[in-house]
Image (cartoon, rainbow, N blue to C red; front, top):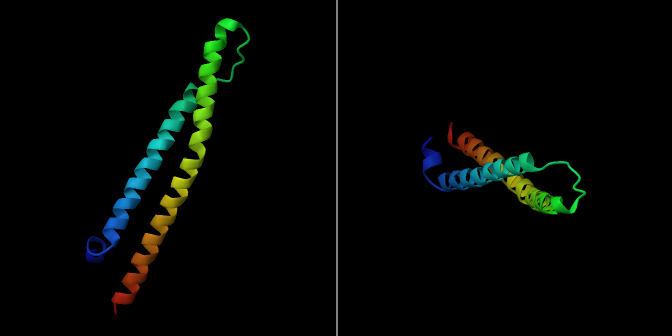
Length: 95
């Protein structure tokens, strides 16, 4: 346990925690946006503002997909790297 708090493992865990927190926040934001998205057709001119709102929501959902995927991949890659290095370090130091 000492090897985690000393050296470079603790800063890596903090960075991983921050990245994962941002990833979870983006997932939550996407879920909120998706709950507001409605599959409706707006045909009259009076409903044009609702159609514009829906288009804005759909565009926000589209823009969020790449950062969510990237943060997910980086977060999973970092934790796998941290676990691998921790195990390797543990196997190298114990007799």
